[in-house]
Image (cartoon, rainbow, N blue to C red; front, side):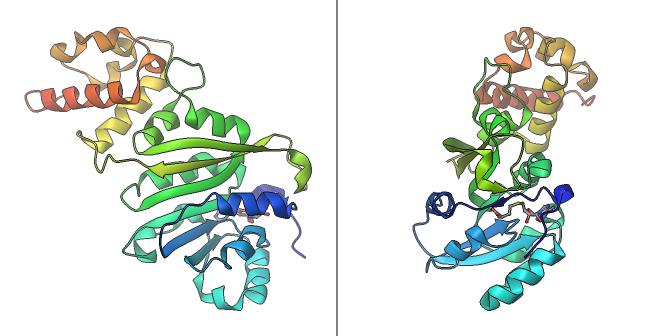
Length: 262
Ligand code: SAH
């Protein structure tokens, strides 16, 4: 047995039917590299390992879980990345595409998504369980209070689909919050039409002061007058759609050619 460790966000899923629903939510058309984040004692691993089209890799930080997995899944023993997913080099895992699945450690779920954002050219799909509140926020559209940085950045690359809720009682130990499973599927935007780092910066800076108009929130970027007069600048971050943010960044980038302040 593996003792659940709170500091690693360990809540082990005990319900086999829910595990099956999560694994079934991963849509694969052909043989694919699948990376499970935080397999723990393998409730999803076991089912993933039975799917013939799945070429499975694991990322697990907990030594005790890794020892358990190596003992129970001999064929996977050299496909376990023992360590922190956030530090993992996904380029080295495969030259091709990756599908990610997992009951994520809730304490680092935002970091996991920022990491995935560094690999949008590789990560085709993510099926994951999260704290419901966080899951809702990721899928949120503009015009709501919970729409935020990760909603915009992720939706620029992924279609996010909320799938189902999971109550605390099916975990050991039960978390204090409701959970939810969502799927992110890579959209058709191969690349943004603007500089991707600048896009991230604009989105982050805009939401840093979400109650201010962008004209004020983006002051630290020293934007030239020709950008400041854009009507989008009268709005607040939460009023801008993903496309608006892309448009705005494209304009900032264009003006950057003539103005080197940014
Ligand atoms: N998949 C299992 C466990 C989910 S709990 C189940 O559904 O029952 C979250 C898991 O993530 C734990 O096994 C924990 O050890 C692991 N974990 C926590 N932080 C991690 C990190 N930084 N990198 C990889 N795994 C991590």
